[in-house]
Image 1 (cartoon, one colour):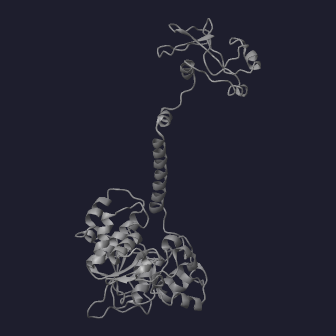
Image 2 (tube, rainbow, N blue to C red):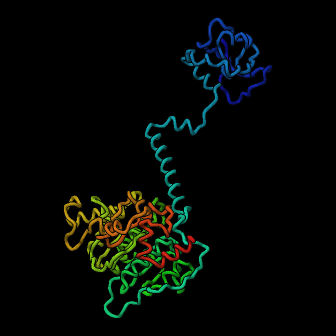
Image 3 (tube, rainbow, N blue to C red):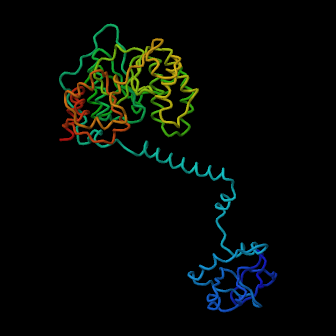
Amino acid sequence: MFCVPDPDPDIRWPGKSQRVRGAQRTPVAMPWLPLTVDPWAPKASLALAGWCPPKAFFLDQGCQQMPPPPPKMCSSLAAQPVPTGGSWHHLGEIMPRPPDCLLRLLRGAPRQWVCALFLSVKFTFFVSVAIYWHVVGEPRGHRLSSTLPLHVPCPRGTPHAPSPGPPPPDIFFLETSDRINPSFLFTCSVESAARAHPESRVVVLMKGLPPDNASLPHHLGLSLLGCFPNVQVLPLDLEELFWDTPLAGWHAGARGRWEPYPLPVLSDAARLALLWKFGGIYLDTDFIVLKDLRNLTNALGTQSRYVLNGAFLSFQRRHQFVGLCMRDFVEHYNGWVWGHQGPQLLTRVFKKWCSIRSLSQSHACRGVTALPTQAFYPVPWQDWKRYFEDIGPEELQSLLNATYAVHVWNKKSQGTYLRASSRALLAQLHLRYCPSTYAVMKLSQA
């Protein structure tokens, strides 16, 4: 038996040769101490007996403090029995205390542990998404070179201005970010649509343009698009676009919350409001148009056997199907799942519209047509690298025989460098369907 003092916050531990005044001497059993060892023996004797004292204060008549043993002599302590009974109280006072935050976590239920882990993973995910959308710039190979002039002479063979008469449906492109310097793929999309529809008005709505400025910023891409008389580049006012639609309330509340996919979700909403108010054809800015699309009315494309895609939409003004899509957008909103407000929304509304459970049961009903995969998505997103592989003329013709426009899957392909002079599929599409953009892109790589 030997003694340690009871814990008392008013007691200040003295030095080696001082006594603790006012401390009670409480006998404490130390069952892990070998009976053959004198606890007040020198360190060498204790080490030879196989016992390593903890970092603690040991008291004799003078209540002295023993220095801790060398670390290598502590291996035998784990094999000794642990203290029992009331000695845990005193051992806790003399052992190092863990941080309070760790103690609170360890005292919590397993559900709290799972919650803490879930929040940590979510936070890491949010940070990575924020970096992707707000830090990562335009990828190499799709960026307009800063060494090129801000203006280019308009090439020959551009479409003429639309002739008077009943206007054909407009073709819309949207840029819902603040970017105002279009990439080569962006300008190719608009140019190919303008060349395929010389009588139609091709409208490019850009959120980053100032609303009251009549002149466009000095950028090469905008200068190139200005060569086509049927192309109009206009500012995008989202509040005005969503006004008097089921999406107005959603948009007002969305500005005050953070979500992982703000730009894709905003684009999904804007295209629905655009077609609801004006009607016409909507295209993503990573499409290359091959043929006239005006004979496709109240239609959308099938991406795969399981899902539709809204990268191409063609509907009359205030069509009931688009109205159902806007209501579903708000009622079943989930901005945390990729595609929930886009392809998945169109798929579930189309199934309700046609009263079917699978897309294989029907491709057209009640005046709405889901065009086959070959029409707009001849290359699945899983095979997006095919656009950067060499292809022969016959294979190219066979691939695009039943295709109206080609979706390039920019979300997957944007980091891949495209050599304009190569025989890659995407390079040949640029050369054939957007030659003005192709010429500038080739010049930038010279």
